Image (spheres, rainbow, N blue to C red):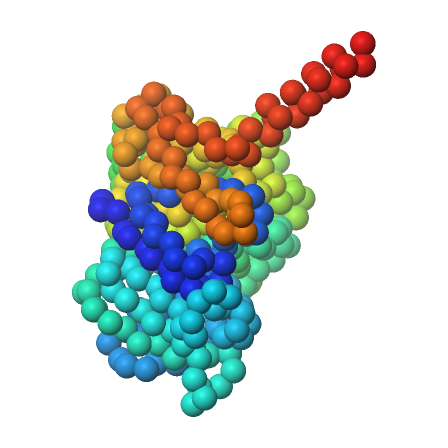
Length: 359
């Protein structure tokens, strides 16, 4: 899969930045360094590309289906920029600007140098604020793949796809061959939550429950009795397993509410999904997620190291800086910028120095 070039000009904290989205791309770094802004730019561009063959189209800054709430035009334009924002995707140039003839909360968009394909395919987005456990959720039998940006349709999607075929390259063990969605999902869930499986039960014509089964205890529970981890990770597993070839999945904080080992195994899962033909963009603060990717590269031939890119963002000198980090075939990282998942080392050093000086 070819990399997709993304260029942002005058967009929020970015004066001018160019990134290349790989099969799987990680956005890492301190808080408030532009990671979420980059994702917002991609979602805004996705909204605009649907209309790209029209001129001077009004694009909303509030779009709940994409969890976009960008405020007003002034909130969007970099303080050092002009009165317009540019987002380029594989040289398709999108220009956004405010105008007297459009109401507040909208941008006027013009598309230049139109390319037939952006390289991103269909985009699915999973926001950091996914819904937690619910006793019941709505059952919509018309929803086939879209879990929703907050995961609110996940139960319906599971219910509607029990026997959907999943290719072997998306299975935990490729030797399983092609299998159905229910088996593929349960196999991955067991990797992340040992001895746990999940099913969805209809409780009426328009309601359903997520049922969690602990195979060791031979008991079943509704989702509200087992904490947040399973509810938060299900939309990620379901969306990736059902996504079409060359689709793009954007995931914020897949590590949320997960034990360290589960975080590492989610990293492994995402590596397998990226090797199957998906393009995955992950915003994360978890070194365990990164280590899971390193493991899938070093310990198997599933994912090629050149398919992975890590970007580390910092705000030194009042300007957002990005550092590109690669992984070699043995799982080694090419660079370790200051504060890049080295907090354990920094804390250990501080403790050692304090104890040494106290003597």
